[in-house]
Length: 165
Image (cartoon, rainbow, N blue to C red):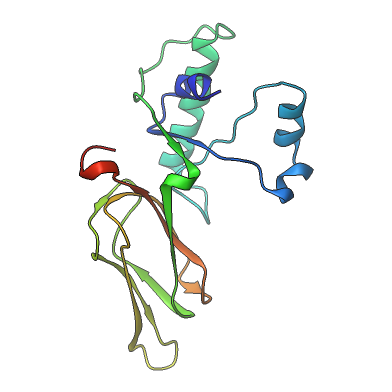
């Protein structure tokens, strides 16, 4: 299935084992009957960004063109990196409050680097710092300004063996 995922030409193809909640989704049920099903995610999480939407549409058109369902001339896209979900480090918020991030999806980060802070909503003082637990590339970064404690603020694709991803 990852080889079909590469046909979208997106930077990453993330493979993951279904969670119990997934059994209620159409995507999961199609896969039970040996139908290839994909979910496409962009950098935007809480709103529709025009650039991200254009990238998603281009990826779908690229895929349809490459599997012969559509005649469409398109940019070749990326050589996708296949990542297992368990290769990503979840970085949780240590406290609730106003979230301010310092890194963006796609940005390389190093172990110990400050990724963001949580501000006290009443005093605007820094309540907690969020540091990177591993070196790698930011795959997901929370965008909403208010957060609760133990919420996933970042997902980082771990750099394996100190080299390339």
